[in-house]
Amino acid sequence: MKKFLIKSILFFLVVITIISTILITSGGYVDYFYEKFTTPKSSSFILGDSRSMQGIQPSVIDSYFSNKDHEYQLPIMNYSFTIAQIAYGPLYTESIKRKLSPDTKNGLFIITVNPWILSEREEDDVKNSVFFEEGMPPHNMEQVSISPNFEYFIKNFDYFHFKSIVRRTSKMHKDGWLEESNLPKDSLMLKSWKRNQVIMYEGFSEKWNKSAFRLKSLESLITYLATFGDIFLLRMPIDKDIMQVETNFWPNFDSDIQEIAVKKKINYLNLSHDNNYKTYDGNHLDKYGGVDFTKNLCDSIYKLTKHSSK
Image 1 (cartoon, helix red, strand yellow):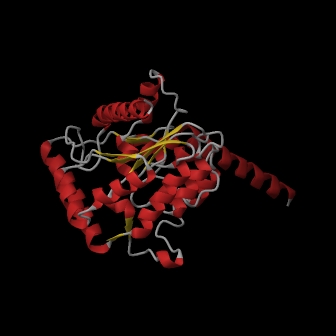
Image 2 (image 1 turned 90 degrees about the vertical axis):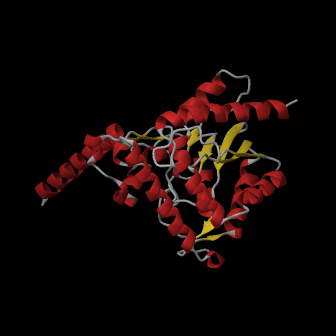
Image 3 (image 1 turned 60 degrees about the vertical axis):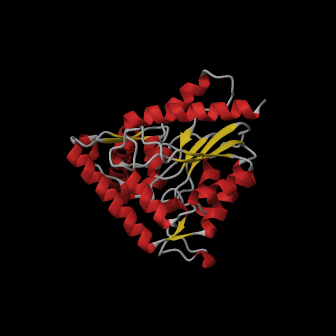
């Protein structure tokens, strides 16, 4: 019995060591979210879905503002996920609170918006506090700043794709930016990928509805973060065909968001029609277009903050 216990303990230690090594050395390749829960708490955030997770690069923001006289508390963390896991609501807000550094006084918060992350879905029953996103990351995580993060490994094992250690076509960086290197090889592939995105959103538009609850949740998040720094609402660039689907689904979306911005005395940067940046599917900026977009976004933020300080 004693030998069995010793062997069991040794086996357990070996397994833990192997898992820890994989998570520490290759966590950014085997899971799209894992690294977000291994880094220290942050004072500045990029929030939203996969558009911002791939399209806004924290390192560009950190570099830009390090050379300016505006002293935001950086580095900024990209705490965006995908449309499958998040919408603005109490669960996302609670996760943001867990990740927010308690000493934050001058943070920068870029909150990206689009109709889909402010919609009520078929799994939602908001009157009874039932939300589709419950049980998924980041909402199912208590420990959001520990490495290696075994809570994430245990609760979200289904998200791990270990073959990516070899393929390495996508990498989640420590700052929360997802770098996608699997880009279309020609115009035909790009056109096909764009069409797939349009079809996906057309499907959403048939099943989802604009949500007053999600809009109120966005307002509540803004109210909370307003005590910690500057907030900018942002609608990111997308292909005109996807934009048409969104307009058909929620015709007055921009005016609804602008109303919130005016009410909360913050800025709304609507850059959705700016098609000067490269995407790889009409929906997500590629890693090259993301650099240009993030730089221009920083210019816009800096000009607005300088103007407001006068």
